[in-house]
Length: 130
Image (cartoon, rainbow, N blue to C red):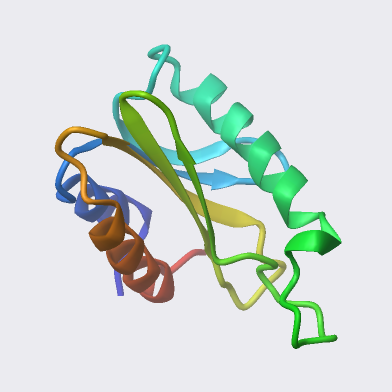
C-alpha cells in the first residue's frame, strides 16, 4: 500500500498531469505536493482547493439521494475545468475522520479526465495515511 509520496508520484504519471497534492480540506494544508500548479504556489493552491472542497462537502444538495446515512467522505470527487486545464479533487476515505483529498491538475490538451477519475479512485483506496 503506497504512502503519500508514492501516491503523488503515481498521479504524476497520469497523461497530462501538471501537479498533484494531498490536501486536508479542513485546514487547507498540503500534506504533500509534486509538480506545478497555476500561480506557482503549492500552499496557496492547496488552500484554495480546500475551500472549494469544504464548501461542496458541507452542502446537503450534493449528498447521495438514496441514502439517509451521512457518507464519509461526503463526496467522491469534484471536477473543475477551465480553458486550459482540469482540476480533479478526489476525496480519500480513511479509518479516522476523513478530511483529505487528492488534487490533480491536468492539461486540457493532453489530459484524460476519465482515466484520471478511475486511477485516482484506485489510488485513494490504496493510500495509507498515518
